[in-house]
Image (cartoon, rainbow, N blue to C red; front, side, top):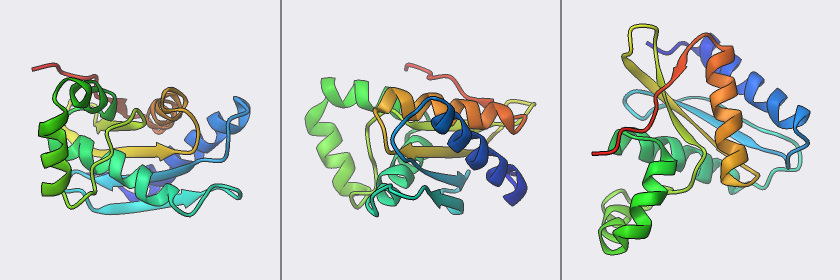
Length: 144
């Protein structure tokens, strides 16, 4: 189970990574394995729409079972499927890097983090840094 304390640690470490890297202000959402929001922070200067993007990256990753970088790659090759998937998801799925699945030490899926604010590659790097700083593991993409 992903705790509020672990979620806060992920968020704080992700924001610290963004500041140390000189990135644009970010927003960070942490969801449990069922897609429910545990914690969220939006840095000063980050747009209000960043919550929807960050949570959509995490939610889409959970729903499909792989990170949002892989969602993005698949969306390029299957645009019609992903258009329909977005409709089925009520527009909550964001296929752009920055959504990363979280595993516990035993490899169990316990949630996801989504970040929005800078380029997707940078958002993803902050997500991974946050997960690792909390003593958890980022689940690598599994291509089916």
